[in-house]
Length: 196
Image: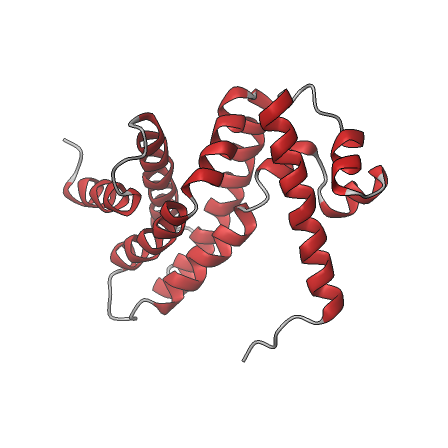
């Protein structure tokens, strides 16, 4: 059973969120490239060097929720019944996480807008997603008991992430008026049936 975080950990999480909020507000108002670490630090009421205790780069502030989302996907995947096929279990996990995105739509749209307008943030996003693929492939391989030379877990991980990425982009481009989980379900189903 997980114990609630102690005071020190709660303070760190609070400061991290404060830095995120300050940074995203500044990026949104003045542009990513024009915003300095010093400006973020001033807005968050921290020393500039403290920023780097929480985030390695400015790009990582925009993508700060990535680690939490990966953890949530894996947690949801592990909660899917063992009797379900791995692809079906992945679909279920991604649909649940997509519902989180739906609930946080305004904040996510701000972050995606910043990412889309800045090549360095987009490149960092792709780099982090490659890490997601490695982690998901490993989790899938363990669940299915496949050998290291079997490409199936990596292919399924890459395809699941492609479903998420395509659904998110389509959701944003179409004005995010439809349900994101519904887009995810459609993508997974289309791949299951074959794109031809």
